[in-house]
Length: 216
Image (cartoon, rainbow, N blue to C red; front, side):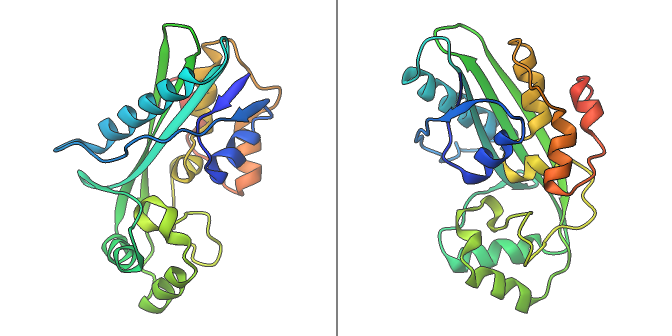
């Protein structure tokens, strides 16, 4: 049985694209960055910690999937905004510029000794949205539970243009990286993961073939 160590509706939705049977067993960990910690090290540390925590409360033989995503402006980690004011600051900071989104996915067999960790990085170019659009989006309160204060898939705001990387990564779970990790445990989907992901998200992914063959 696959166990998703997250209560994120976005991760549950993305994992369902793969037609895997899974249960949800969310865990809480301290998500405070360490002093001087780089974004990719931050997400890898948290994903592994979540996987270990979930493995401790799962059944022997289960395969735990844990993930952590962050938005990074250079080496600066932009987590979830504490309030509308911080959300506005983040969105103004990112407007019209390209930043990075990192997601680490940790996969571990309960009672086993091996953990696999995949890291996906996507360059995200933000469009020059207006102040009115920015404030209207904040008023929906959607930014408050999102790293970097935005959701790439939000149809009303649509903050990102000309993306050339993994769309699912920016949502919180890079499916081809996950499929690559699960394959090492002889866990395969019965469907075409890249096709299901692209069809469901309405996005033509330019990198899935490179990811699946281990070149990205």
